[in-house]
Figure 1 (spheres, protein in one colour):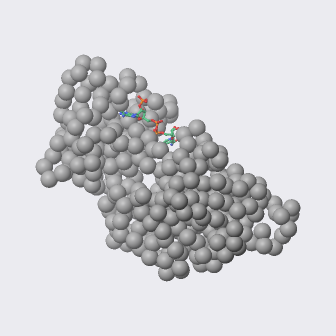
Figure 2 (cartoon, rainbow, N blue to C red):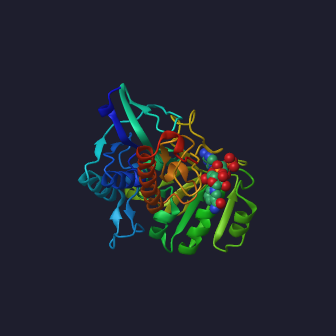
Figure 3 (tube, rainbow, N blue to C red):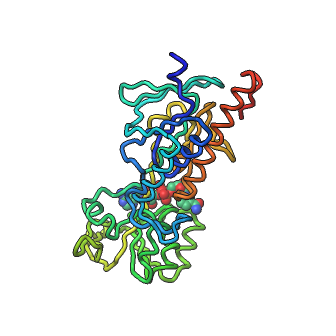
Length: 324
Ligand code: NDP
């Protein structure tokens, strides 16, 4: 392997964390190369208005923001590849060279920043796609504002559903939670909050089976009681699917430590994984905050951690490098 083929830093993923890592890594002269994956721009490209990212006084659309972030990363000579990383073989030695594949193309790097994000789970109904952007969302913090004073539904019975419902209850006129079982999976504390919120109604044993509305705008939810098989319709403007997220870690989980839900585990207060030179940023390692701004923040941290790691390699003999 020739030295010139070994990159200082490869970034996998193109959401706010990946591009922010690229901006910081490029400015630190790590000459990062970023692989976008199948959905360049990540989850934000599936949202409409983003009003909570600091710096956009008049708001911005998700896709526009991602184009801006990419342009900013490219301004400092980040090389962006519209390709998918399909396989990895990380070295567990300090200073070791990590190997990645983009299809048949082999890549070598001293550091890798993983920012592959997480994907919101959907029910799999055709109507979810039809009404996406017209009232169906998987993020109350992102989209709840558009349903101020209106009636909405939340689907799910876990902590996310309970949290989204109580968040929405502060903005919306009424929130109906559809729970498919006869009980919540959410923690007692969250259930308590739901029970104590006046404008939330919980329908147990209920599932969403269809959506109706003119011009691809949600007007009604079609639901079924799975005990009685009775169908009914509920007038709503927004439907929030809160049945969990899946972190995009399939190709890493044989090597890197993940938690019980598949999220990459990072060392406290840093973005270091259990392999030296491999860092994780954004939703792939954060199931709690899941915001563009927190993802961007951890992308910045990952680039700084990578720069520090490379600096220590240059300045100290291998044995002296303090790692973990
Ligand atoms: P969970 O996997 O905990 O819950 C998913 C919920 O969605 C369950 O009630 C499940 O039903 C339901 N569901 C799944 N598939 C379907 C479907 N096809 N149709 C209808 N309902 C469905 O996911 P969460 O995102 O809620 O939580 C993930 C993790 O994050 C948990 O560990 C949670 O505790 C944590 N979390 C913590 C928070 C906090 O502490 N503030 C906030 C949010 C999450 P069923 O029970 O029938 O399987």
